[in-house]
Amino acid sequence: MTGIGEVMTIKAVFFDMGGTIETFGYTRELRLNTTAVINQRLMDAGIDAHLSTEGLFDLISNGLSSYKQWSLRTMEELPPRRVWSEYIFADREVDRKKLADISEDLMFLIETDFYVRAMRSEVPEVLRAIKEMGLKIGVISNVNSRGQVPVNLEKYGIIDYFHPIVLSSEYGYRKPDPAIFHHAARLASVPASQCLYVGDRVVRDIDGARRAGFGCAVQIRHNFAHGENDEGSSPDAVIDDLTELLAILKKENAVSEKDTKRKIRAFIFDAGDILYYRPQRGRHFAAFLKEMGLEPNPNFSQEKKAIQFQAYRGQISHEEYREAVVKIYGLTEPNLVERGKQALIEDDGNVAFFDGVAETLHQLKDQGYLLGIVTDTANTISAKLKWFERGGFGRVWDSIISSMDVGTRKPDPKIYEAVLGQLGLSPDQAIFVGHKASELNGARAIGMPTVAFNYDEDANADRFIEKFSDLLRLPEIG
Image 1 (tube, rainbow, N blue to C red):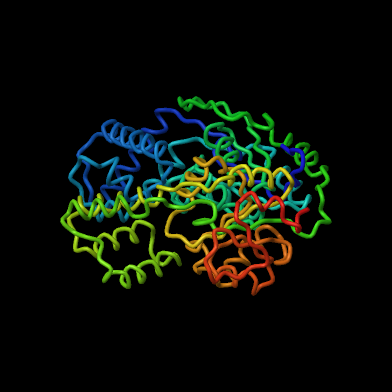
Image 2 (cartoon, rainbow, N blue to C red):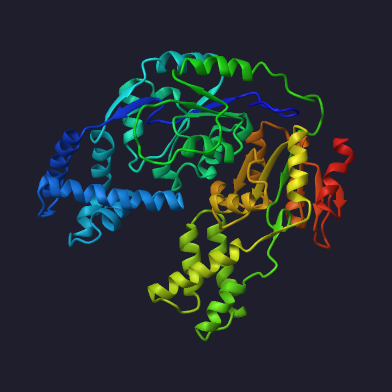
């Protein structure tokens, strides 16, 4: 909860779905009945699994269990078509196209009819009270179908309270990956440190909210034997009824903000060559090319820039970007493409951190400053947060704005405005820290004070620092 020197009034409340907004349970009989319906859907689509209801149920259960273990390890969420093809029907000869066409419908059936779900009776009253407090309300849910959560919220008559509704099936990463929590905070236009999350699971909900720097993480008890280890961070509070959440919110929002009259309220950072650098840039991919009898070819630089242009603006995915880079060199055999992509991933993650970064960021956070990032990147926020966690500063961020998310790069004003909008600040209230002349000029053009670190020769800024820790001695924050 609220710590010394932190601005922690809560402006948004996010809920888990299953086990939090609704309780759930199941019986084997229920699941076998639903399996019979699934089998009929398969038959209607021209897919005969040649299995009894019991046999199909075992196939589905084993496939989902295998997928679950993979997703727990990677924290990724695959689309239903891949789950059904690569996990449930992985070893069976079926028409993959027909299976893909009905995979969302089949997963929806599993996530709805494999369970008995019921809204907690106090939910409407609690949502009304939170809305009357002037707080934003959202959902962050691990789910493989796109339909189950909105359909149930609609059935319960409460869907209009929730903006945004963030699903792992749409975002591609699952709780406890902190990236999905940051994504939700960005959509709500609220700093992560001013968000509260309530969920029933420690490992998924409490740990994930903690890693994302949410201001408060509340566990609600749910009596369901999920059979998984659920030890992790201690929640700020443990409740049995969502009405108890209202007292927590009132207490949190009774805390006065510190130094609200000071001019500078936030620091916004470029990421690469400010927080970290790559001492052996491109080493793994160069070694891969050498093994293939190839050499990095400067003649491909323009083609690579064209691919980067698309990737940095979110026009192609991270996977498509890396695959396109590998194929520039004429490599098309699937195994070699995968090896090349893995080499690029290893190069991207081979980062070192400038001296004093973690300590300085934590001191700025302790002094009550909001911290944000604007990054031009073809990497996921999930990947970058893993690097930051390794560097000891994963939890400090109030806003992380990626060029892939907003569809533009620095120095476009929109990318700076996106982070300012989430933090609720005007340009003159946030210092931008960068190294390139273009990105510093872009920040200055919209009225942001600028600080240059590890800067290019042609950089122009209001302040120049030689050590990252010099940020703590800026006269603007004295």
